Image (cartoon, rainbow, N blue to C red; front, top):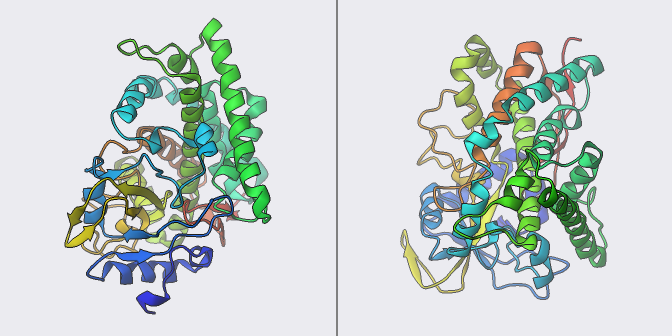
Amino acid sequence: MTVAGIDLSANEFWGLPLAERAASFALLRAQQRPQFFAEPEVPFAFERGPGYYALVRHADIVEASRNPEVFSSRRGATSITDLPVEFNEYFGSMINMDDPRHARLRRIVSRAFTPRMIARFENDVRRAATAIVDDLLAAGPCDFVPQVAARLPLKVICDMMGVPDDQYEMVLTKTNIILSGFDPEFISADPDEVAIQLLGAGQELAELVTGLAAARAQAPADDVVSALVTANIDGEQLTSAELASFFILLVVAGNETTRTALSHALMLLTEFPEQRALLLADLEGRIGGAVEEIVRHASPVLFMRRTLTRDYTMNGQDYREGAKAVLFYYSANRDEAVFADPERFDITRAPNPHVGFGAPGPHFCLGAHLARHEITVMLRELLTRVPDITAGEPDRLLSSFINGVKRLPCEFAS
């Protein structure tokens, strides 16, 4: 394998066996400078962009994240290619903003997303996890993704937002489209249809929250939408468009990433039975470390993009104003300079400064506390009641953005 043979922009790269993918990133980390890649071809982009630097080392990603005034999110964080302006109506959330606008929005929404608010839903999370394992035992060996991994985060996030039960499947379907990564199972192969599907998914989710917000404005309930609609921080409130784009961000990110982490958890506990035995020997004492290691190893979100606001030098590399840099969290979480034997799954790994929720900085994941709680509760319930559950061969999502699993057969003694 040579550096010249690696193309991070090719869909084919993200369909490679995991060992080949890991070896490619190890080779990129071994280079003196970040490599420059042509941008992927996207059906709905007006023209192909100028290319990007692939940041693959932990130190580079941490430095870029801590310097948002240089490494800007405003021109797009979730897509390497600049998106057409019409996408901003639904996908222009605060993840694609810089301060002061980002700080303003985060200040408002964080009041409705604090550990105290989440704690009010802890009993609901436990009850949901119990019901899911009840259903799993009744169903017997099955596909773990829809039966377990997708159900908990979908129910929790919908309940938190006040989404009615009869809308759960719509939310799941639309989030699958938005995070499809052009996997043909979820999105059309016809380039003319791709933008229509993505914008249509965004529109349906926006209409859902707009209706909820109108109802909560008249009769507030004990949910996050009510808290967001009524939030007033120093005279500031969310606009309807800001509320809609934040809702889409929350249901998409809060659903897909936790589902991915839970799917990887079962895969890792199957691949490393000695770690499962270690965890079962002291579940309460080791589950916290296990959750952090699952998130590190899984790296549910593979990258985020930044754009340089000025010329900048970092670790010997000169960057020009306007250059794009893509932060590959998946690679940073395998950086040999930070993590000994990084491909090994080790629930006792300490310290574990992974960037699975993003690196330190203003864009660190707002939902990290909730995600950790969901994974912890689900694993505790699952391993207490079905300790012998194992994973079969996964059917992976073909995506450069989400390290997803579409299907995962599971086995256990019923």
